[in-house]
Length: 398
Image 1 (cartoon, rainbow, N blue to C red):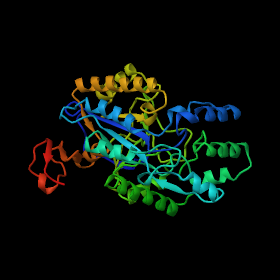
Image 2 (image 1 turned 180 degrees about the horizontal axis):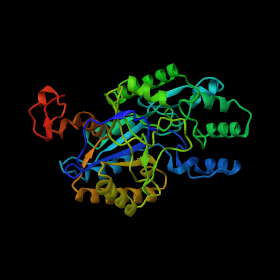
Image 3 (image 1 turned 90 degrees about the horizontal axis):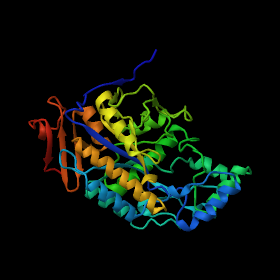
Image 4 (image 1 turned 180 degrees about the vertical axis):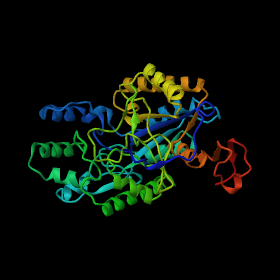
């Protein structure tokens, strides 16, 4: 018998307030290929070890790619007049390959993204462009990882090993690549105290980089105790508790039975032990998904499931070495947003949606202004907004 660990606070009428959240992962990670000049070398390594290719979709974002994405988002306004916005889940560190080589793979050393990026990854202007997107109201960073989908401890063990996988790891290291064509779950090998130190370091970096502590944290690498660490450190939004794929099935990752996902959780479920809300993703706009498929799923989420739409997306959709492919995916995003505009949607961040489920209201900085949403008469509103009617209001607060 399922013992429900959640409670409900507020429910959202999606006919009155059709919410759309766009969650996008992997930003800031220097993971696979640093530049187009490395493609031939990378593909040669893949061929040598009989591995699939395709790493060209996993390069670090460039400022011009972010600008192209921002322009698409700014071209679309919700019912309240605010632009479409990405909740951008961002990795807060990358390997210092040169330092790791100098210590003979005995100690992991990294570089915070606000302190630069490893050579030869070209990260000039990336963080500054992210901050610009925040001011323009189209970019809202949240926390994703320290080392994306890779346990530093397991990676060091692999680099020091004698197996074919270790040989591959060292050849990839020579290309300034840390992704091993498999998940080495980030927190694997770390006890809860060590996880606390890792996450706390990441959160402090996040604040130094973006000016606020993260409200949301997401990674499919999280253990159940990792989620507790997040909550203890102030996270109030846990996305991807599960997901409903476009074909309709609610799933968790079957290859990761150890993680914190729960197939029974519903979007808007709240924790009984902390001021936190759990979200799920219910529309996928990824590399292999079509416009027609996305719109059909969006209509189903609104009309049949009567839920807010939470779109799953990844950096690989909008950044890569094949400019034509990137252009096509931006055009697909533009078409989806155009269809959503006609539906009269409200574009929210993950943290806003969570806050409305928890408190009936939300506050978000939109450029130089502050947007207060009060969507319930009995909302738990701050004192300065007690007498505000239901709706969206601009506040003169810092």
